Image (cartoon, rainbow, N blue to C red; front, top):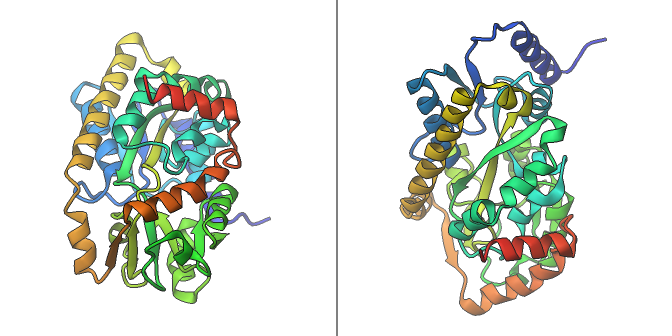
Length: 325
């Protein structure tokens, strides 16, 4: 029986990891191009790796796709075959849904509220209560870029009514429900297939931070961007719980300190991202800023999706309380 290429890659990576000696380098699987100017995720990963190496723990970056896709990386982390992976939130959500609070539309005012909820409000610890028993720890949450907005190839979107008739690439069923609440439709497309989907009309656009089409070369297809700031654009750094708990106290402190350094570098990078809008315009993308009335329209249309976003009313209230701590 012949295995798909992605499975062969994952199997090979697992074999290498299993046969590696205890002193082997810590593998960090990237989820974006290695661009310190354009990728907040890479800023986080690179700072983390540099700190580890500078303090006596050998670590190495692996290019996006080198060890498999998101699902394969998740499997390797949960089995203790891969130490660190930069991953989408919904990967962790498959173990425990509490992390989906970070995707609630128009719930967080800014990254400061996110950090308050995660750290001062204790929500990162609560997320990990539901995941570490299954082999995965969320070490940190990184900002990919500024708040997510609406990219499409058809027309300027100035109000929620302008979404009618658009077919958007969706991450999962919960995002499809959000698009439907706005009057559009959604179709789930693997990220690797997005360029083809945009070229062939399978999808008219997607929801992402402004930097994403610049990073991945999608400005040839996407000519309209609405700076809707729907939610913070976040990814998770997941690590093998088996690996993390197996560290000595001294080495675990180095890893925790590296996480702090990476969080700070990521937030500092985010604060300096105003120039991305000029880059979009230079690439031929028309930018639309929502009026306060239009933003309120999007927010009102989005609210019914909160409980359909896989969260209970109690979980939503926990996030609401935590962001106000």
